[in-house]
Image 1 (spheres, helix red, strand yellow):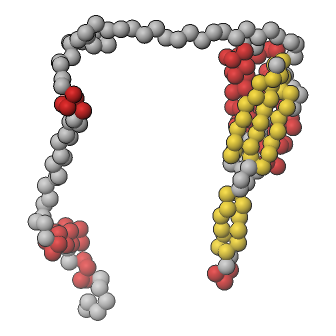
Image 2 (cartoon, rainbow, N blue to C red; image 1 turned 60 degrees about the vertical axis):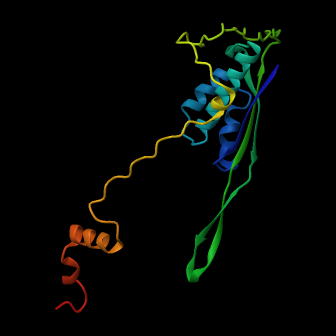
Image 3 (cartoon, helix red, strand yellow; image 1 turned 180 degrees about the vertical axis):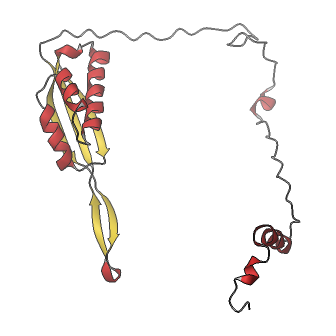
Length: 192
């Protein structure tokens, strides 16, 4: 039985990701996990996360144990690159391509396993008595159709009081006195 997991638009160049992908191809799931945990490459972490996702898909959806799985296939394809520009001499701009990767990981069982799919049961619908609330609080008051649809208006926030009056000149005077005082005049050109 094959179980897949996909990772799209990983911000690493496919060339660098393929180095890590080649290491775990054909390995048991447990060995591959250990290999990726201690690998010093940057691509190891996202591939480890993807492997764990594939293992959990297999155990959750098909009741397959981790010991019975191995990495049968791992593909690393090029995704759409991000295009950026780098400034160069004499006002020129050179293009940069920031490459992305799409990874497809397929985990397969070593021995054939009979898969038992469980039936999904619908949740029971609990009917409440008239006037009762779902959490057992007070009964809801009867409301006519028009009042029920009206949104409740929110109170407007009160703006904070300003230490200066609202005219632009008073605002400029307040901030110039508070922060700079007479320093502006001393350091202005032709001040002396």
